[in-house]
Figure 1 (cartoon, rainbow, N blue to C red):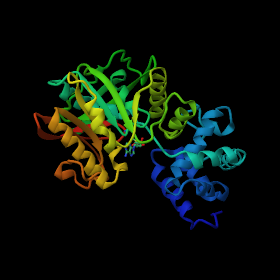
Figure 2 (tube, rainbow, N blue to C red):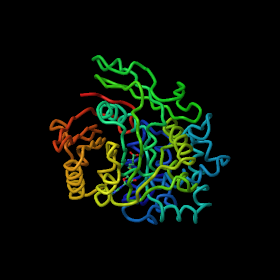
Figure 3 (tube, protein in one colour):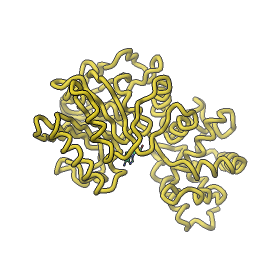
Figure 4 (cartoon, rainbow, N blue to C red):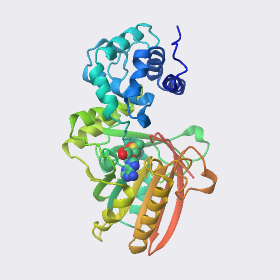
Length: 375
Ligand SMILES: C[S@@+](CC[C@H](N)C(=O)[O-])C[C@H]1O[C@@H](n2cnc3c(N)ncnc32)[C@H](O)[C@@H]1O
């Protein structure tokens, strides 16, 4: 039976997310189907701040509680928590989800009121690595500054292993012959606790034979996640979709790495702190600023101001900036003219050398780093 309140804004959002996730996240889609029909579930979202009343927030809150109770019946539907998971189409899901959430009302309300959707995608390091190698060819060691760093997991870039495979369907001669890059690369998605990032390539991706030397890495974030706080770390895992098992596993492995040796993060607004953060690097380190899916969270004016800060810093010392951002959502960045307005992940390298700025539109990539198409 359809929910009598199905014309509400919240139900529409949940149903839209259900359609969106159907092909690549069947469990999320099934959960959304139940949530849309069950008023006790979708109305919970009204307890979140207005800008966070998103189906992914509710799914993350449920996921957070399920991760903490892996023996509960509901956990049997989660592909990331059990290998022999139950069919998302199993009608029992509706009752089990309803009871699970309603029995945990106070915890759910607390999560919805206080948490916001925040992710940290280590797979984006596979996009950054070839660009960093291009920079390191004539400027080394690197002083890495990742802006909008979340928990700072992409500052662990030198500690991951990488494999770049040629996408045979690409038609042209790809680079990356399946060779692995990074100490201890084992061939498994997670080997000895080290995530392996596998990236399919088209075009002449300059895959390095070794990871460039990074003398120091720091992140900047307005609202950093403290990876040493068990609840923050669990929330980060909860924001990762349970259907995407390899993503979840490599995130969990990166969190473990970060817990024992936490990333250095400057808490602050990107525009306000970028200059100081660059200026504090010693002159024997070449500053490399990276941004991935972060600048779209700034206003248009703030993005312009951020670019102006980098221009000013680049006038004073050699500087490089690698960004993996959406031309449609961050149009004030120096994107290639043919990508303007496109909803894709554009990988761009901007170099300031002796005050001169040069922009290279390197590639387009998968938002989570699964493929890289060199231009
Ligand atoms: C979607 S996350 C991306 C995190 C990371 N770059 C990645 O690729 O996984 C966007 C991050 O940008 C941060 N952020 C948003 N506005 C910011 C600002 N004005 N200054 C610094 N960080 C900001 C958010 O707190 C969040 O952690």
